[in-house]
Length: 23
Image 1 (cartoon, rainbow, N blue to C red):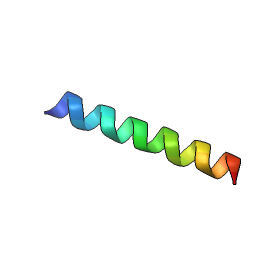
Image 2 (cartoon, rainbow, N blue to C red):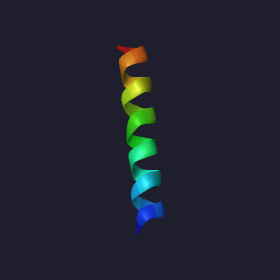
Image 3 (spheres, one colour):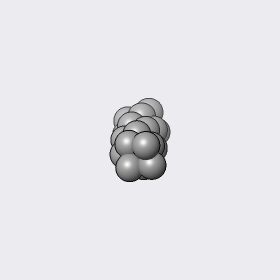
Image 4 (cartoon, rainbow, N blue to C red):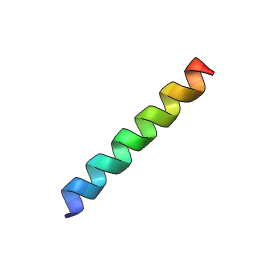
């Protein structure tokens, strides 16, 4: 569970960062 949640959080941060860069 910890690993899965950590991965999801990491992906979310990456997507948010990419979205900010794109915007």
